[in-house]
Image (cartoon, rainbow, N blue to C red; front, side):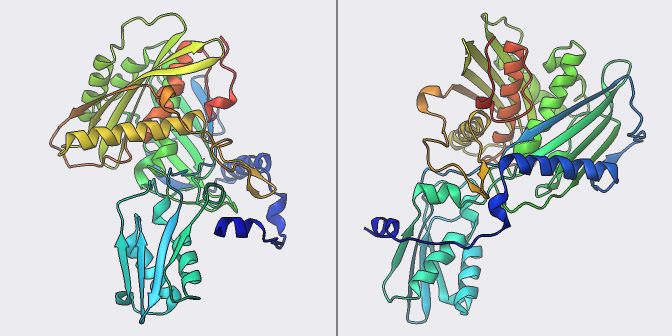
Length: 432
């Protein structure tokens, strides 16, 4: 009834300059700001080691590549919802939240009451992926609840949820590598936009003596929010795509190439080797199949994944994902495996279909008819293997997500010879 009533209300919104912003213009702006920062040497340094040559001097052994990712919504299966009841000088709240203390503080500030007068009953329901760390829906419900003595339950429709999200931002990342006489990277230069967290997300694990990693900013009107694995969700794709390109540039096996650069990282090497072993890396695949590999550490957990794909006419099917993870110690193995599978499916959805586009300053997508999710019949076989190294314990909810996109595009290259540097994959013709 409430939704039907709201649909009958005519709302006239004020106009501003944002209505002239479109997707193409956003990426033009990002490219411009990245180029200007390079031209003016106006970057913030993330990591620097060794000696970096003059970037205006182009070496015969230099290789360059630029990668692009789109805005992403969280698209939780359960839309945002919140129940608030203000009475007798207190505010009671029922919510499934990733940030209950933050909500408590925000509501107390809005109502100008002490935090001890805000009671949060956190519920174990509703997908989060970072979206339920925000307080926007909560404050909206409290605003309404102030006007009545009864409890108010606010449920966003799917359209509201997708169009009023806090998004993983669109981004560009450009790389330059100078190779030594053995075809290994001697110099690694990486420049990208935006820096959130964790700070180490953009640092590769490989043995590269000279590295310069830096970023700049660009002013976007699209609100940013934590998205599963945060900055790792982008840099896993960027780094592991580029290192794969370097391997193929030297006509080397991508697994062996990575292994040769991880001799100083025994934990990484063990995870990588086991992934290759369990995936039967050297076994020949049928015609029109491809296999790709990637490895990345996030939140203290090292994850390697091998993806197998099949190309049928112009369509791709992801057939198998082999995941090996070292989180130090997985205390509840079934729960850990479930999180690995969840992160893979979430990242696979984003790599294949995930894209929020901006038209007239607003989000163009509305619901799952134009913001596609991975379906059960598309979901590959997922095999997860755990290594308990007994090192410092890492996370489980996010570390498998950053690895799936690069492993997938690397498998696509193996199958088709086509290198995809821009996500999502659905925008590309995969015809052999």
